[in-house]
Length: 289
Image (cartoon, rainbow, N blue to C red; front, side):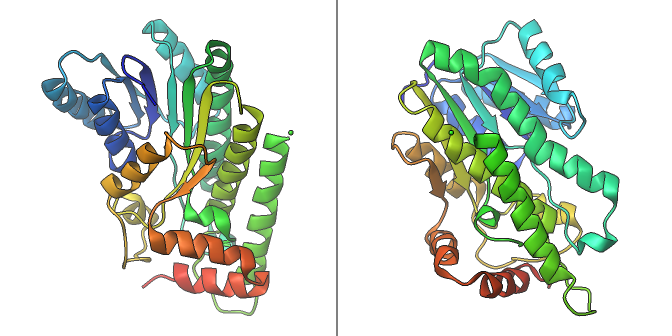
């Protein structure tokens, strides 16, 4: 897919997968709007990119997308920059580790806002212009957590996927009396992203807009450190490996791509596994070291 001279807005681009998207899109001649909370890291990334690609236009916008109304505020800032968004990479996300009963309500609400609500709002803001132009990319970073609980109606179906995944994970977490770390809300938000993106792929087929859900497994980024726990420590991929898979998939027609053979087998296997067994497997995989 020819994206040269297009403009990409990348959320969560101060490190990890988002940063790698910036690097690879810049290599393709794509102008960038880099968004994350950490302005210093965004500025440093911009400087590095412009050293290598001096002809590009790279803007940075510091924003906390876990705050209600942040999508509209970001869109306003992007409009003030005079930028039209042709490529939207919804990469920003966060996960809490531990049983739901012991987690802070407000922190979980912010997680849902960032992983689901802001993603949906940004897609709603930028997709109409893409379909009108019959050109564009919406790339939502989901997760292999989308395929199992960790447990035309795109948003409705996605919210129901969220409720099912969250409830089944909660059922498993509360079974018995011992606390076993899980990621009920995180897995449910990624089920939302996958369901929403795949439905959107079908709705926009023939419109000229490429919609893709990227589902990485454990990736060597700051994600795990931010949860405060160490888990899924073996078999992690690099950000480059994950983004390479996504970039290659842009030229194909599939709605979803899973990064890595082991992750692909795991994601596919869950579809043929009894849900009670699936819950047990998920709980063991996510148990802290």
